[in-house]
Length: 123
Image (cartoon, rainbow, N blue to C red; front, side, top):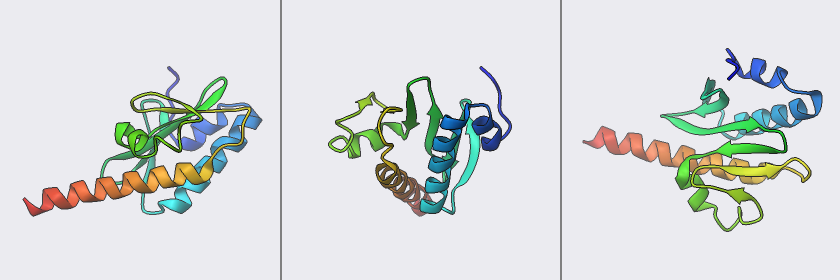
């Protein structure tokens, strides 16, 4: 696995058509959750706020997002058109990417992580 220092390095490693999609995902998620930081975890761009919110990655034929099982479960109905697994969803490259759905998932994961941190603080 190639190691990347930054999200920009990760994005730059792809052909231009995938770079455009990855940059749009990055910008969309940064606007949705501006308080989150970004890093590389598991070789993928990752949004972090009180823990991981979600990872995203470009693959040969799809863009994958990895929002933890709860993010998949919460939006199961909206994710029906896509291939999903316990903690991942694949958005085919031959279809428009559902940026609004990505934002909803990221905001849900933010809310989930904030609740966890508040719950721990009460103990």
